[in-house]
Image 1 (cartoon, rainbow, N blue to C red):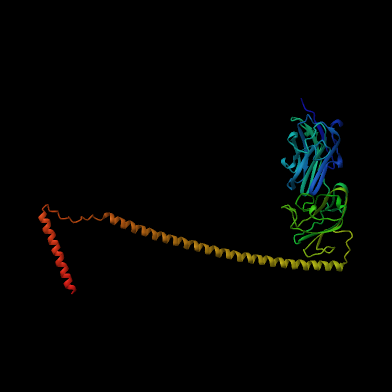
Image 2: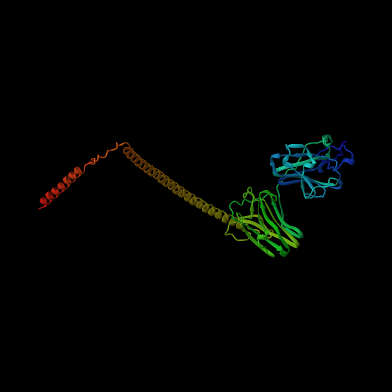
Length: 445
């Protein structure tokens, strides 16, 4: 049996035709200039819908979405499609990653399996769906739009139910700065924020951020909070941050000099040359108030005040400088920049010279080690040759002894069997011995 479909028809353009569906099937109808299209420059672009009467999607299998994006190449790889039964995002939710779909410039029609979504805050009650959202992070000027949203079975065709689309029109985007200087609350998050689209700061040449702000009710601070700078015009993208728990804040005015290169966390794609977002948020249990004076950038030996080299936010209480004071300040900053550039050049030259000397020493050491290695190998070869020669000589001598003929001992005279013969022979020997001894004695005399 064909599953029941619930339809949402959304007008997107400045000129749209009327929608030819019955009122009972319409979840939402924008119409004409109130159609669901959003523009953005950098950061998140959101389209969300709240339904007072929830929809029963227990018999639906798919979500059908017609979605427009002006430049998909500027998608910042962060975005979701969400439905919930909690009336808000991230609770009782199914969601799908926008980047997982084939996204083309212009209109896209996507058929999304309802039960392949990821849960957030538990699974939704599919009989009570009352919230829809699509958010899309962009890097650069962009536009997104939703034409229709529908739910139904696998074989249903919703393309004919879309609105008649005219030309998608957009307003010219004008960069502007938005500053929320004051924060106050008695529970949850209290924050101050600055989105500086029109006037980002290049802090590449500076060491420190100088921030002055007032706190009232620090005893109510729970310990959870961050001080953030980003180059994405939004939080949590291209961000560096410091944990508020490590800033030792006090009631009254706080002046913080923070090392720009020693934050608690720094994203690899944070751009020091384009700082355009600031936020300080603190969670509280009880009344907590914040009031921002200024956020500036400078060098380690600079002082707090209204004459730092650069500012992201400057208090309305900052004194107005005369043209002469402005010129003097600009000249002082120019001189300081030149001195810093010269010092940096000297440091880099010294570093390069030290690296050159170290490289030469390393090369010399390597050459000496190689020469020593070669000499050791030659000495070892010479000793091996001498040992081999000795071994050959010893082997030759052993071979000569082995090859020499054996000598025969002289035969002993045979003993006479006659007793008289033995006596005569014995007498002759004795007489010879006596005569020899006498002759020797005579020669001595």
